[in-house]
Amino acid sequence: MACLEISYLLHLAQVSITQHNIYALRYLQISLKKHKLKLDMKLLIISTLLFSVNLLASTILVVGDSHSVGPFGTSLHHLLKNERHDVSLYASCGSIPEWWMNGKSTPCGFLAINQNGEMNSLPTAKTPLIENLLTNMRPDVVIMEFGGNYAGYPSDEFVIKDIEKFIWKIKNSGAKCFFVTNPDTRKQQEHIPRILNLIKSAIKDECPIFESYKVTSYPSIGGDGIHYSFPAGKPIAEAWAWAVFQAFKEVFP
Image 1 (cartoon, rainbow, N blue to C red):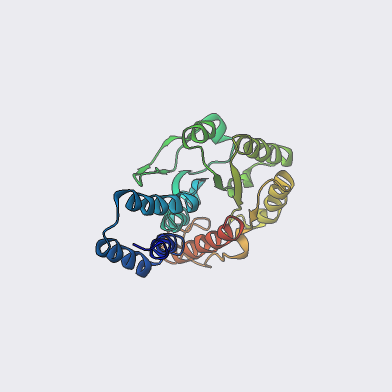
Image 2 (cartoon, rainbow, N blue to C red):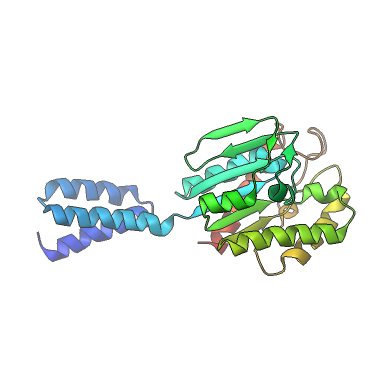
């Protein structure tokens, strides 16, 4: 087989993966059957395919509060997984970063989707320790969704230090971070500007920040006024996840 043809097959191998081009992949399969390649050449082409996959795939850890337990979290996980990333999601209802550093139990819902896609949903559970997740997964990026539960914390200093400590643990592990703030709500809406300013003060330039209130509008009726796990809220949560996903891809292409 001519060198030019072999080079073309290698090119097809890369295009089929990097551009998600199913036609290139199908043509590659036909070409490999048609041409009698030596074993070492077939191994080279297969290695190219695998190498291309590894270049694209990132290990991503998603952690968050009740919004990540609900449709926002599952939608974001689905979108990232479809991009062939190695994704795990852990969400603890009612949590703030402090819970992920002391293992406080959630009384209102827990969701875990591991790297194999196995889902575990529980009414109560201990919040996983972020140090253990970082050690076991070694993520390239940690996406964190927090903010709404700071509404009950009057101390600005506590909020800032809580976020700073959490970010430090993530960055110290070698991972990058992406912070998703709390969305619009009908109840406790007055707390959103304060919490956003505190998040910005804590993070500074350590992580990109996605300001969720800009892409969400809580319905005037229905739901509990905070969560989006109801018929009229679910499409909004899914659209929010899509907006976060698009912003994430711009920062981490």
